[in-house]
Length: 218
Image (cartoon, rainbow, N blue to C red; front, top):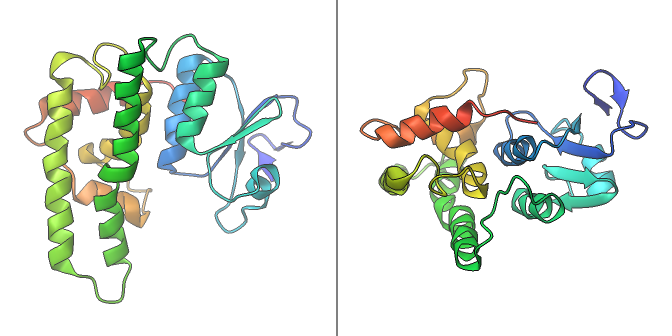
């Protein structure tokens, strides 16, 4: 697999490599974090039909995977924690232990609770006989939870209040679809995020999506 520019990743001089795939929400989490930390990476773009490069480096087929000078880390949240431990500044996690715990709880909630509804809608739409009543219930839950993010942004410009943090990295790639979707992005899960979320009546959420959307990415 060639990295952009035709460089063979196995012989590339870059010591930090990010294994990624187009449109991946979890990859975007890491891309935002790497840019915030000022880390330059060599991208290894995999084809979903051939996951060999990421399998060879990590033993599993999911992206993102970060190869940081030989230290291989899979899973977007684990990569965020790795980046914070190896490159503490600029910070993505608060130094205060209580504030760090709150952020960790938020990340866990987003992954294990918030994502249940869109995943369930995707599964229904991908089935032979979608349960439209169940879809409506999950859709209403997604809409209600957008109000939580609107309220979280009452006291600051980011989900961690004043400073950009891992909370923004974790949530943005999913919540951004409330403001629309690139027509070229036709993945079913992303259509779900687009069609069952809206920034209507949520000006702080809309402003946050625009603000984080303008940030650099690795």
